[in-house]
Structures are given as C-alpha cells and as structure tokens.
Amino acid sequence: LLSIAFSVSVCCLLPSIGMAADAATALAGGPVAERPQIHGLRVPDNGITVDGQRADWERAGVAFTQGGVSASDASHVEFAYPDRGGFGGPSDCSYTVWVAMDARYLYLYAEVRDQVLANEVGKDEIFFGDDFEVFIDANPPADRFAKKNNENVRQFIFLPAWVNSQQPAGLIFQAEKNPGVKMASRLKPDGYALEVAIPKALFPAWQAHPESDSVGFDVVMNEADAPGLDGTHSTVKYAMFLLSAGFHPGSPEKLGTLDFPPAPP
Image 1: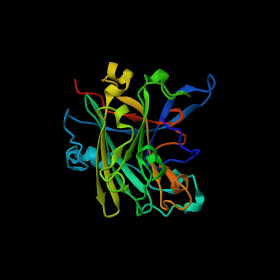
Image 2: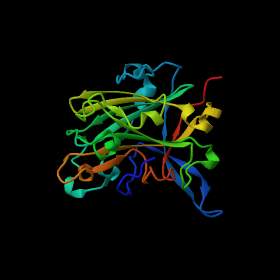
Image 3: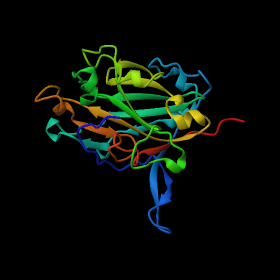
Image 4: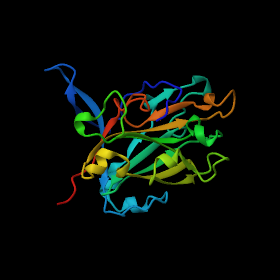
C-alpha cells in the first residue's frame, strides 16, 4: 500500500448516509462510536459486465435507483495544496457510487463530475493526479478497523482512460499485484464513468468465507486542476472522500462499513 504525501482529516457526512454502531467502545459502559455505513446490491453471478456502462446495474430497479451514495460537498474535501484552488462545487469534483457483490466479486460503478481531468505523471505515480481509489478491509468483524494493515486490507488505484496522455487506455495501478481486478471507463461531457470488479480471492479471509456480507470500505478521488506548475506533488489539489475521515493507505481504522443483503437461501 502507498503512503501518499498528504495527511487526511476530513469531513462530516451527507445526511443520506446511514450510520452504524461500532462493535467496540472506548470504555466499558461508554458511548458507542458511530461508523458511517452504506448498503450494496447483491446481484446474480456474472450479472455485471465490466464495460463502463450502467445498463446491467439498472436491472436492479428500485434498489439501484435508491442505492447510489454521493460525495458532493466541501465537507468531504481535504486540501493537500490549497494554492491549487478551492472547491468549486459539485461540477468541479463530485461523484456518485454504487456497489454490488456476487459469489466471486465486489463491483463498483461510479459517475464522476470533474471539469478538468489532469494526470501527467508516470505509471508508478498516478496517485499524484486525477485518480479513483477504493479501500477494502475484509477482515472478520472482530479484527476489522485495526490501527495497522494486514493481508486482508487493500488499496486499489484506478486511472481512467484518456486522462493521462502516457496511458491513454487507463491503468490499474500495480495490476501485477492485483490479479483478476478489472476496470473499464468512459469519458462523459462532465467527467467520466468508471466500473471495476475486485475478486474476493485477493483477501484470504474473504476467500475462506465468501459468504461474508460486510467489509470495511471507502472511496477516495484525488483531484488535480493544475498539472505541472511546480512539480509533480503540487498537481494534487485535494482528495474527496465518500464516507469518513482518515489517511486510509496507512490504516483501515477510519474506513466506513459496506453491508450487503443476505444471500437467498
């Protein structure tokens, strides 16, 4: 996992995001900490094709219509370099995310609004420009949200197509370390759409218990509106978070919770 060169201390939550009680308390009898929670879709095996389109997601009907979770306001923003400019509202940087699961994969579909797409770094540093990142903690509930990463915690970084001239087809960062991960994207007039599939088999605990219907989760979108002004790192304007505060590459401690409905009997 990467250690990206800025700290994170975000954000309050959108009113539409539910809250879940954390299993542990700081002191016996003390108040139960709240953790942000979202709900995913359970879909038939092979029911989603990773092609950057939303048509197969829409087959879920009302569940899809009501299932999107949005990050679209300044309370979800952490500025790394404030001199790159302030948050210009949802058209400047925002996204809506849907998540689904079948027996083998976790799927994510995102529709991103971003007026300026900028990422001109090499493939080993794509996190210093516009990107899209997914964090998953698939540990058993008793071991989840620890202060340190282990083999059941992963960060995935995706570079959409046509954002970086050196990588016009887009890129899964360190794909060789993430076998089986799939990505497709397409440009839109106001940004892009991104669809990914992440195998449960990448996580030992999830591979052993594929029926598990809850994981630690968050999404981060890095934003660059001023590439190359005074060095690679200064291109990063800010990161926008879906769920909760925390420097997720360093620890899953402050991830949110992603739950799925029980599998049919």
